[in-house]
Image (cartoon, rainbow, N blue to C red; front, side, top):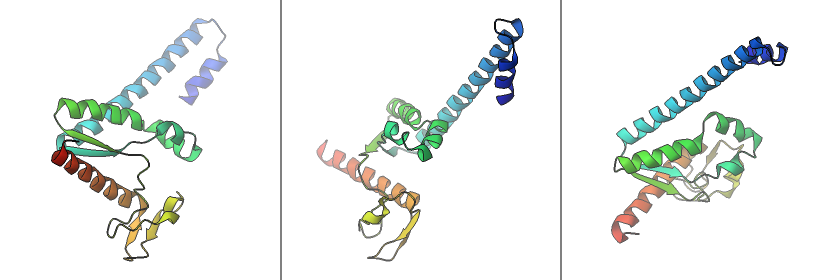
Length: 163
């Protein structure tokens, strides 16, 4: 891609070769866009086919993109698009998609004893030990377990009360 961009900058404006180079770049970008769409549909199909209840965190992607450490990964993996596709596929296949509030402290809560460690707010802390039950937690795995349990809890309330 960089070679094509360099090539177009070397071409004379308005020339046939510049037009041809521009078409090559457009085809390449379309190929990348289609590959990403295909990846999103593969991921969502697998999730929908293997699970009856899917729990996600309602993320504020716009504010996450302001953090330049996180933004690069978000641009390569469009989370909001994956969740959008998951919503319509879950609805179409009569599956449950539950979203947890973005302010739920999923990475701070010990999934064994429910102790909330406020020191874990710092994203640089990747693993921590619970001071109450002394369980070693890996940040992302612990958050995933807590999100799953919170989603199932929300689903059970829905079944009981129809909320």
